[in-house]
Image 1: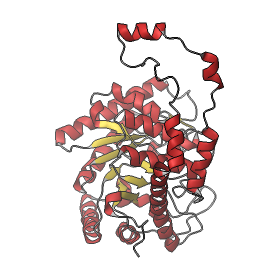
Image 2 (image 1 turned 180 degrees about the vertical axis):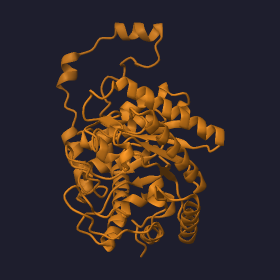
Image 3 (image 1 turned 60 degrees about the horizontal axis):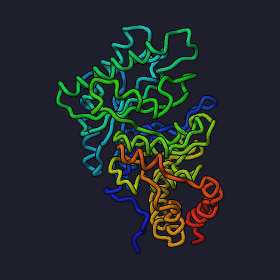
Image 4 (image 1 turned 180 degrees about the horizontal axis):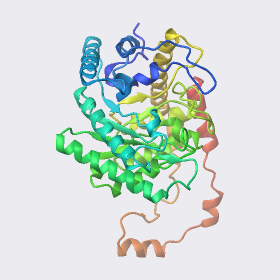
Length: 388
């Protein structure tokens, strides 16, 4: 009997080279796994059932590689993707690891560092297009401060805007057709990062020269680090037409960036997110930006990748059950019940103004009405736990 939770290409599940290639190093301990060559990572992900593989420029090409070395490495990687039927839907640039970016990249005080960061990003865009990527993610991992004595934050925002505008023009000039997805994070590795939340980037995008080219890449863990509701951030991005990409993982709120397997820490939060993505028809990559536990060998890393995809598909099936549950849907339908003669609050007009000003409301009766959210939430738990 076929596994109903086996991933298929139409699910558009993807992983970064840096996810399955993570060696388990942390601030208190060295690596526990040997380096995983990119071509081997492609083979592993294909075996696990993934559709796509994503990369930072230096996940594939060392930062100091010569042009001939670069071309040789890229050609080998492309052959591996073709051999294993994998696509590269998204690429990004590493502007956080090398010591040159210790004070930031696009927002650094030194104009030579800012110029180098833009140059490096343009070359990473060249690589992305060469590999077939249509989405380019920008995460400002070092765009922040430990002390605000170093620069005025409005100057940092202006520098960031100049850099993104330049990169958009480069894509237009080269006819790349890339869509940029900006990724927020509240802190780590800097003490404070300038664009701390998805909502901050949604406010920033309209100030750009080409806002139509730029959206967001919400990450589950990055919103949860600050104790925020990731579903709300994703829904705001979707409603604004700016959900260009998404990073799925998990995280206990208030802790360092844990990048746990999707759904392994906050299963109800993951359920609501999957339910939303499936119901609104999100058709972009479902990218898992997570790491296997440090306890694992590469067999465990493959289990981790399979687990991310399986959990998503199980939760998608639970969301279907939730929608088809008669008692749940009866409760949901009742939430808007009441006075059906209430005037509509929609597009303003003098007629609607007068109807609303003239309406009589029984405030006490409205306040007494129970809403049944406890029952609704417990029925949701029953669905998640397999009790109905």
